[in-house]
Image (cartoon, rainbow, N blue to C red):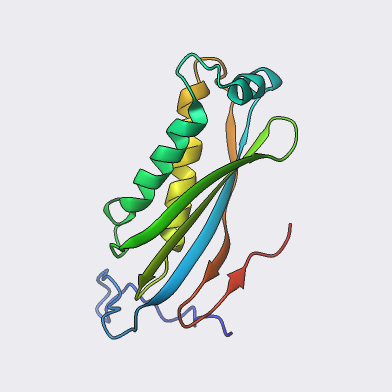
Length: 164
């Protein structure tokens, strides 16, 4: 697969105005995207998260719901994104080392354009929700490495991020 020509701006008209890309002529196809972020917390906060014992309640449940809702509203938040009929949004959590909680979001659709922005929005808001839920016990939480891991479907097929 060749990379797009960087001199061709898909979101600009010839006279320099912003525009939403017209995907009307494209065929709808199955598409998916997975994004991830890492939330870094102290050992104390990790224990509270694992025990579901935070003063505000279960942060992971709140983050899961927030991530799903965020994916559904991506077109309202990112100005030139198309509104997509999402087939599913999955938010998952896994500990990747002491104090390193990975948040993953996978979005799926059958549409004329991809769901990368929906997956990235979902993982970002899920991570921010975790921060909001733990800030009462730890203000120094960081959110790292928000990134696209994989996209499938459409003209360009499968793309996977290189291993770090």
